Length: 242
Image (tube, rainbow, N blue to C red; front, side, top):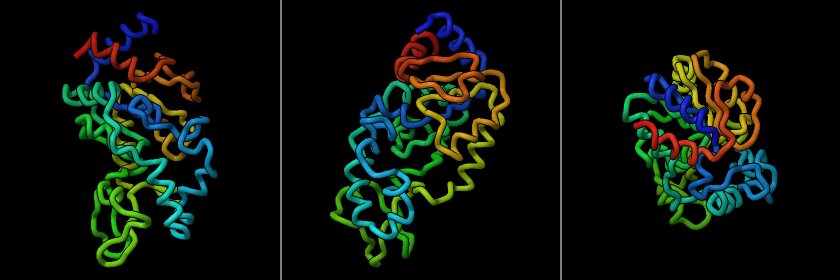
């Protein structure tokens, strides 16, 4: 890790009180949650994600969907890592205005972040498709087969499946925060999942910082580029600021 880049990053954070973080699966891999498309990821040895976690597949085969969902997409024992914790500290210090995440694991909130825009929903929220009753993650984990409500309705996770639209209110909050930010930190995302990745185009602030182990199309626009694990970068920062 380049010490000069780390020093510059620290200075950028010190001077700003309007930072937004945009992150993806790479933020949670250090918590033991696999990403999606790597050989060892969630979909590495499975059918196309567009099929198995699609709205149509859920409606047609809820039993098969839930078998895959419980085995490959739920990690109830995962804990926040250094990245989640540092971002929560930035928010508490009044510097970070929003976390915009593509993740559905709820680890940002578990670390203490409150201004979180979950673009793809959350495994911690589930609702009956018939009466709308809310159910937590524990209920989904405790059920066998397709979880059902007392009214007989099928319970659906509040995660955005392929073929479904993102929540308009969440989009609005994310775009508003990114548009107003003077610093945008992008980390742990390949920026290939749309429309979520397109939201960073609303950024017109002073500093764009990329933290990603793999190249992205936005790298050329970044003032700072770190090709390390995001937890390592934030751990190093934590020793220099806050």
